[in-house]
Figure (spheres, rainbow, N blue to C red):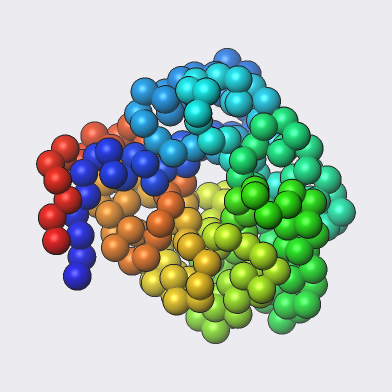
Length: 230
């Protein structure tokens, strides 16, 4: 049965995100401070901004850094090193992008090796989320391609599978993609194109347990503060 959620419940599931190429240090400081005021779970930033996000905002704020972003076409050794350096700079979570072309080609051994390289580099205590570009996999492949990709990521040590970078022309998160991904096993982070409270609730009810939002304040302002109702 679908749920409705309080503002604070949704905030506690949000990665407050700033990944624009033009983002400055001041922008990241403002992001972290806003994240603290909104009570969100984490901030999600580019790897070069990890240390800035870590020392800004709340001292308990989780910092998530993206790796191989946004194309996923980086060599696995580069993704692994980028992830390791981000963790050294204070990231507690890593969101890595797969090689979508490998998934569409059916090269799941390469995909598993790619994810495993990052998993090994950051260690088990670090949360690893694997971005699969679900809209592209569904558009250019099919539902089975998406499912098999998520299973491969899980086999290689992913804690979450994540829908989207938000940069792919195929689009961002969809309810159908989240529903499919939630059947695989790892937790699901829905991101890309979630702009309203209704969008956020739809993703949570479809099976997401984390949300990637850049317009977090607008989403949270659309939610009531009353207790969740079943």
